[in-house]
Length: 310
Ligand code: NAD
Ligand code: UDP
Image (cartoon, rainbow, N blue to C red):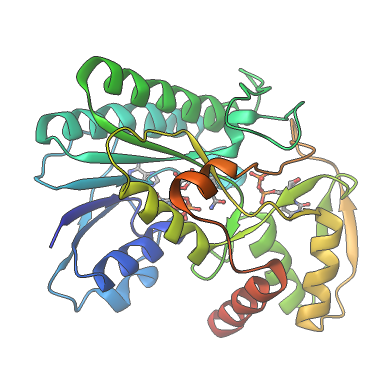
């Protein structure tokens, strides 16, 4: 039995990860400040004696003995990470320093939930790990993008300087049950709007693209990455390479919900990446991983979840 710390464990991805790790017979410590996470996501795990929940903010140091750390704490939706951008930078940067310091001291493996946002609005398409990105350093998205880029820098410096065992995963748009209904991200927004008969709000032309990965596939990838030997550090892309325009997503959500909602167009978000698709050759080769749930199936499961909570 391993003892594993999951920061951001009450969030969307964190809660699925905690559940999966517990099911595999590990002891799991979930650490969260509940900024965007919710106890509802983990309440079904709380009866498990090997599950421990701690309210803590990772911008402050934290001491514990564990074998592995998954560092997921950080708001991921543009609305939430732009709500208090200075705090977002602190969470990414000070959080990384605190968790890396912990990993160093206790000799734990540590995995960082990095992001496709490190590529910014990419001029190279699709995106390989070697691409350095096209990021605005002082725009509205910078607190998240640059925070995550600096966190990657810290991970690699702790690895080079202190031999910390790091795993850096660049996650591309992932969706599924446990997303916050008011999260503001496109999948949850469109489903909530469709189920409530409200207008579906497309920001910009709707021709911008994203590649959507179902949460179970992503969690499988994170676990495989953590299980690699110490020579595997990443960064490694993780996502579903099937690319859709936002307009196609809106139409699919309307079809699958049987909604009468209309699509309306609103101004584009600042610095909105126009295209995004991961090259996942490394994940395939190193982890023998690729997504198995395609968008239609994943959306059906997600719609079912949102119907229940409504
Ligand atoms: P989420 O907002 O649902 O989860 C983030 C969790 O971190 C929440 O429970 C929140 O309360 C917690 N948190 C935030 N700041 C904290 C702090 N200072 N201290 C302690 N806890 C804090 O988002 P998610 O989609 O589950 O994302 C999880 C991680 O994966 C994030 O680091 C995110 O950047 C990364 N990621 C997610 C996606 C995606 O598409 N879902 C894509 C790329 C990267
Ligand atoms: N988007 C949209 N309507 C919404 C929410 C998002 O058109 O109600 C667009 C957004 O402008 C972006 C894409 O959908 O082009 C993905 O946005 P999201 O916030 O989910 O994630 P991002 O990949 O931008 O971080």
